[in-house]
Length: 161
Image 1 (cartoon, rainbow, N blue to C red):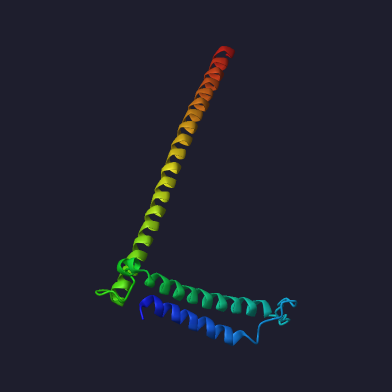
Image 2 (cartoon, rainbow, N blue to C red; image 1 turned 135 degrees about the vertical axis):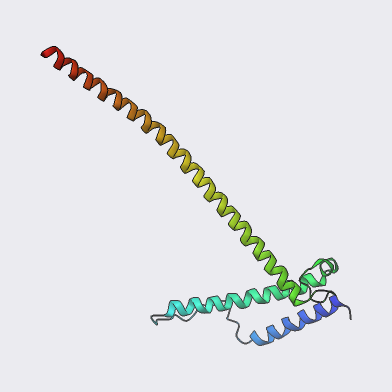
């Protein structure tokens, strides 16, 4: 029996067992399925926990089916870095690869964060320099007005005497 035939036989056995397990529980077609209402104060929380558990179960079974399918492809078996059946790959190497990928991702995120921070500082510095020029020109105008007012008072006092 080849690998594909084994996968087909295993899938057929699983489907058969699933159908036999749920054959007596299937709802009638005329009656739509309606879950029993929960009236407990924490009912919503319990429903979300059960929903989360069901989702986790479905996702794990989906991943198993995906892995079975992908491993049935000959090209994927050769190129898969996570395939433990290929010689030279152990769990430590896979964990190291995952850790390296996580580290690279964190480093990339940190680099982006540093770039955003530097850009923010650059923009803030530019804004402060613009404000400094505006305030300096405003100050010089006010000082000129003040000097002109002082000179006019001095002239008025000297002429008035």
